[in-house]
Structures are given as C-alpha cells and as structure tokens.
Length: 439
Image (tube, rainbow, N blue to C red):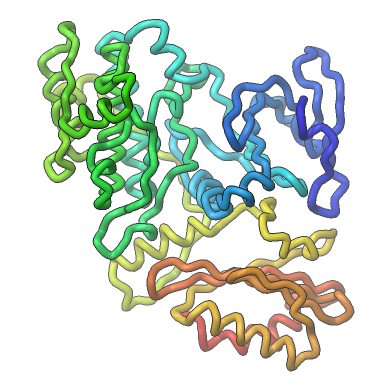
C-alpha cells in the first residue's frame, strides 16, 4: 500500500493504520482498527480508491483516500465539503452510498458502498448493449437522477466512467465531486460554473451564459443512452473544437439498428435547446421508456429535520432544507484544524440554529461573551471561531454557513469537562446572548 501505511489519526484516539496479514492475503492494511484495506481499484488527480473490508461485519467496502494538501493547494475545500454532504444526504438504490468519513492529519477517507461489477464504461467497451438492456440501465439512471434533482442536487458530470455496477449488475451513480446544489443557483435562476467532460457536455454550457442543472444532467443521460445502444459516442472528433461545434449544432446519427421509439427519445434528450429538451417527467411518460419499467423507491434518508418559520414560503423552506443537509458534515472531517481541541473521551455536544443575522455579527457576539467571561479566542478562520476557557475545560467551536442570500445556519460544537448534564457555561452564558439571532 502507498502513502496511508504509517499515518496517525488526527483525533486523540489510538486509531492508526497498521500492516496485517489475513487468511486470504488480499487485505494487508488495518485502517483505524475498522477496515482491512486491499488492492487499488483506481486513481485520479486527487484521490485513490481501494477495495477494503469491514473488520466487524466482513462486508466489502470501497475506500477513497483524498490528500488534504492537494485539496488545500488547489482551493477545493468547499468542493470536498459539498461532495461529502451530498453523498451523506443521498439514499437511493442506484446511487453509491457513503457509509462514513474518516480523517488523519494528511488525508480524508470516504468509506463507500463497494460496487463489485466495476465501471459501466468497461462493459460497453467490450460491445454495445441490446436495446432492452440499454433501456433497463437508462431506467435506473433516470430514477437516480430524478431523486437527486428532487433534493436540489445536480450531478453535472454524468458519464459512463461515473456509473458502477453492483453484484446484481444493477447501476450505481457515483462521483459527486462536481455536483451543484440549489443554493448555488444565481439570481437569474441558472448555474454558471463551467464543468463536465467534453464528450458529455451540454451545448448551453459552451455558450457560457448560464444553464439549468437539471437540463444539463438530462443531456448527459442522453449521451449515455446513445453509447449503451450504439457502442460509441454521438459527438466525437480528434479536434476538440470540431467536436464542440458538432455538440452545439446537435449533429449526430443513430445506428441503423436503433428502433424508431429510441430514435425519437434520443432526439428529445439531445435537443440543443434546453427550453424544449425533454424533462424527466416527460421521459417517464415516454412509451419506449415505460416498457417494463418498475418504480424504484428510495431509502428513508432524512437524518435531520429543520423547522422553519411558519411565515416562510414553500420555496424558502425547500432551500433551507436542501442547504441544511449540505452543511451537515461528518464529524470525522477536519479541514480547518479548528476542531482539534475537541478530541478526547469527553462528550462533544452539537447544536444548530438558523439565523437571518450576518456571520460577522454572530461571531462578534460570541467574542464579546468570551471576553466578558475571561475566555480566549484561540482560533479564527473565515466564518469559524474557537473559544477556550476554564483552564482548557471549556472549548467551543462555532461555524457559520450561508444557506440563501438572507439566511445562515450556525453550528456550535462544544465540550465542557467536568460540567453537569446541562453544560452550564454554554447554557447560562453563551446561549442567552445568541437567542435574539435565532429564527
């Protein structure tokens, strides 16, 4: 195994990675005393993915290791936070599930569902699929994408390489690193970040005028369906600009074996005008699509609930709920270094509240209370602050994340060593001073 052999956990626990030998000989690394790590499955610019096994359950998992140094150097901290939060939120039979996130001083580990069948891309390179099999995978893909869109998540990089197969040869969407969420939509109602893979990119992205995240994903689904049936890409050329011109003009031709129903659907999926491009609701009602279709029910996924004011509009409530999930990150992730002091055996309490006050004003109030109580601000990073007092027996870390233009959510993590069950310092000193900011 490469770089993760001799790291120590960033927490104060004794969890480490050690070399072991198993009966099968495939798993030779013990990670955090929880997983036996085996062979490398794949790698990219920022991450490597390994096959691993849960020591307790003996269940196979995939572990993606990401270098913190590369994340910080590339300025991708928010991207990683968003990807983790999105994956924690999504619970669907055709989306790779994130089990947990762990971290050391130098790396982040995504422990994910293991897709035994590998990439769908690999299977297509061996030969095109029958129309029935293409339809089956397209139905599963649309089910997953529709689920994401209903929760304000837009993948933006759907392609065969980001679709895996499980042991039952069912489809699993993965890699949400380029995903966007509804609170990233700008006042014009569109997304503006240019991203995606050239052969799958929608024509409206090439115009650089903003785009609808759902319609972009539908275009990519059309590319995937075409490849499954044809065995090759609809738009391709050795010259990238020539390929982009083909995409912009929508120049493609279905192979002769394509049925009339599939041709009609592909024409609507690969419509260069996003306004007239088929919607997911229309896809579900398409005769070709509906053949043999079985509705897939998502898992119960709402780990958190957020109460919003009765006066809020349904649109505002939707944004708040989506955004609330976005910032509900795994407690194992530590990108800023502000939470180191919360390690140890004592309980760390977490509270969140929604506020219409500015982050600066809320942080100022925390600092005022700390000063009045003779405590020290020992760390400050953007919209996060750390306070210590009582000779190190009280530690508070507050992080503020913007949900919409007018609303933020405040997350407070604290530890009071030797305090009673009500955590008196927080309850009596800090919380009353913040009450006026709570929505």
